[in-house]
Length: 295
Image (cartoon, rainbow, N blue to C red):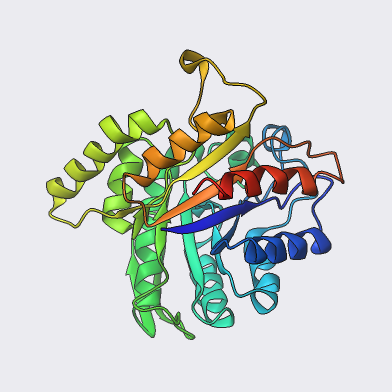
C-alpha cells in the first residue's frame, strides 16, 4: 500500500515556500504521493471551506515536479470546469514533465456557485464528466484524435505529446454516489472515495463497486481512499464519530480496518487546521507524523 498526503494549497499559509515545504516533508517522512485539491472560481461557498490564496493544482504540480521525487496527483480535479482538450493536454504535459509520475484524480464537484461563475450547468455535471473523460481518453490514445458527443465535438486534433504512462495516467474517480461508483468502473484505475465511513465502505460501498463491475463486464477498480484525520485528545463516542476522528487508538483501528480492505493507496488529509494561521504547518505534520507511525 502506498501512502499519500493531501497538500494544503489554499488559505493564508499557502504559497511557493509552503508547497515546497509540504513536498519536502512528505518525502522525508516516507510518503509516496503528494496530491492537491482543485477550484477555479473561489465563490462564497468555496471560500467558506477553501479560502484564498488558492493555488490551482496543475500549475502547482508542474512547479513541484522537478523539486520532488514523489508521485503527484489531483484530489480531485473537477472535470466539467475545463474544456476536455485543455485538461487532456495539461495532464499529458504534466505526465511528461514529471517523468510519468502523475495520478489524475477526478470528480464532479459540489460548489453550485462556482459552476454558475464558470457558466457550466451544475445539474448536468455528471453527464459532462462522463463525456469529458471519454473525450480525454480518446486524445491520450491517438496522436490525431476525433470525438463526437453531446457536449463536445472535435475532429483531427493533433494531441502530442502523449502521456508517458500508457495508455494514460491512472484515473482515480472520486465520489460515493451510485453514478460515481459506475463512473469509477467505466473510467477508473481506482475508486477514490473521500471521507467515507469505513463500515459503509465494507458493507455497502465495495459491494456496490463489485456489482457495478459485474453489470458491465469490467474488472473491479482498485481502492484508493482519502481519509480526513481529526485527532482528538480523548476518545470520541462511537455514535458521533467519523472514520479518522478520535484519539490515536480509534484512528489506529480505523486505519487497520481500511488496510484490511487491500487498498493500493491511502491518502491522508489533516483536516484540523486554521486556514488563517500562517504558523500551522508544524501542527499539520505533528498529526500526520503521529498517524504515519500507526501504519
